[in-house]
Length: 585
Ligand code: GAL
Image 1 (tube, rainbow, N blue to C red):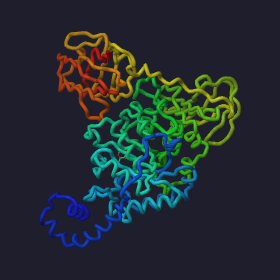
Image 2: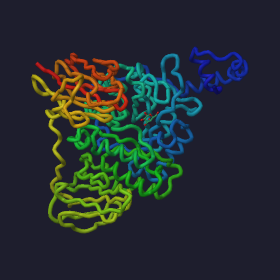
Image 3: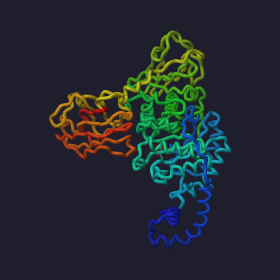
Image 4: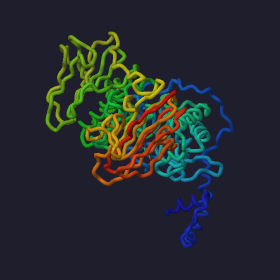
């Protein structure tokens, strides 16, 4: 344990210190204690006694285009301090990043002292941020930048520092006083709050309004379905995936969650329909500059711009080479991301090796990304009818900022190497806006009718793991538990989560759960039904561990329940929610 930890324990906690250790350091501690208390006071600053109440209303005009800035996590993790942040603020200005639109400087986890003060106040870590957070915020503002700060809605942050649970209003007031403009709110330990995310986050959006200072609210829920239950009513951006890492596998995984795969029912073709001005899908912060080649960095950036993703740089701006600066500040590429129409790009082609994305823009043109993931060089083609156009169309290369000419019916990006791509703008500005795909109508993914709704007949809102196969088992045969066969139901393999919207319209959820008879192993499966999402932590049903040949009936009250989460825990097991249905009167 270092002296600082001992010191903090000495001041604010009752944890026991080994006597020998204490004798060795206690003289030093006595001296630094007084000094440290002064630092803590500066770190916390004095807070205003009261604040103005503002009527709840999410239409706050914030984040009308995806937020842009820099965040400390991807490059520094918790190893941050005042000097690094100030130098980064300076670099944001001198590199041209600020003028290219990156205006939020967000300090991620690791900024705070290990303990709150005796009156529950959050403080900056006095060693890392000796002048305190207000002073740092003032510095950031003096550079023409905006100040972002991390917190967590659990009782601890992911780095086990004080979380905001139970201190929501107090913390948002503190943030407002420090001049915070952007809150990154994480979800570690939040399942212990026993509040579904919509309940939890409405508390924060109210607390921010009460603080009197407009702040963008960016949430991290690791892709647990915020898009589906209506996060846009409370937040400006929500994560669609687990944490990004600096490798291409992770880049494609994050892009796919927003751009189209099976995270939600494949019928949605990605989450595009939940994004728009003021509310964005967030495939996580940028790793541009942290990947192994410029070709990778460039593709990552193009993908994020097509997805109307928040552009939070995550590299060390203090030593950024020109090759990376040129990517991050590419004007015509950023303009795709920042297009005021706010239409998120979606996939129009994906054969597992090559992909084409389309993003209709406000000027009546559309941006198209053609990319090759395969090791072999390849041509990638877009046909105008895939993107709502026909005939002869003007094409512009947005990286080269050059017109390529007019092309009839289709365009081919030739001989692309692995991770090579072209980002083009198609069409002539000033025309009619190009329509995107039709949003999925609500009756397809939620309960809208009286009587019985089989869950396998509606789309799920989110899934994690190998789930579900509808009305069949994983071997493509009829669902069968303990010798009884079922025509309807959901079949899952190994651990899985599936979320459905009930829209408060159902009275009961019923199913028969058990291991499918086709399964030959001896693993067990545990079935749970949650009210709301995983963070709600409210378990409506728990089967305990079920072995083969045992079936259990589920019949739970779901009145007023907006969305349910069905989870299966087991290893390589094949488990069924046979006859899964909701009944409404
Ligand atoms: C994760 C989050 C990361 C970063 C980290 C800090 O949960 O997804 O972006 O904020 O916590 O501990």
